[in-house]
Image (cartoon, rainbow, N blue to C red; front, side, top):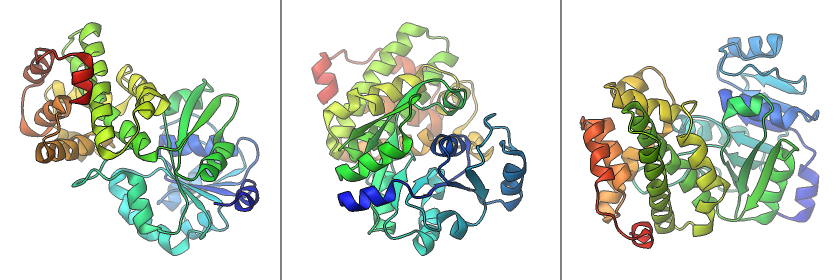
Length: 344
């Protein structure tokens, strides 16, 4: 993207596609200074209530949208003239959303992926799917330790925006950065996506550990070894080691594993307590770590990649292995040297 395009696009309207908790908070962040922001959702009734009441009718967040944010159920309306489009849909809806976007997204609009997942069979990240569906679009990845409820409450947070084109990363940074939401640039979208996806797998394990009351020492061990697995997988897929020790890596890992506010942590706890992954998904829960861990465990088996936490979490979630048996196996595994465990 040229410097001229960058300068022209900074002041344009923005669109957020997806009105879950994070989508709504992101629209609020983008529109607080008066910039026009369209917040798209599928249901016209929900959009009308958002417009009338300015708060989430489903109660997922208590923030009040500024008047500059316009809820709408019309994708054509939301994307009309948009300089940037932030995708905040569930992973399962990505392909359908991309087919819809391809009809109406402005050619020069920057597509910002806010999704966290890796897809079977080759562990492609969301940005690769976006590039396939919208091959001419500049693409960036926004990720980090961003618990929506805390940001909505005005608490400080930080994130990473990653793009191979430095001008694209800078433009998204200008749109999103504020005194309470600090955004840092990266040139490693692959590593950023792997880190954001794999931390959900470790959060499932952390939730299981908490449900079994194994203690903080055990959870700290899981998180630390989880970071080593993240580095191992990320480097295998083409990410850069330094990315996994930044906000998108260890920062997001800590935030997601240390709190029961994380849906993946909650899901891990419920599965360890006897519920099935299928029952959680049937409830309509968006637990992206479940799809990711199934894809990762299958990929690791085919490629002889040592990812024991993913293997055990997948076995508990989808094969009926008792959580206490799985976690005991992890904590009693061969204690390699730190650098050996990280490199595999």
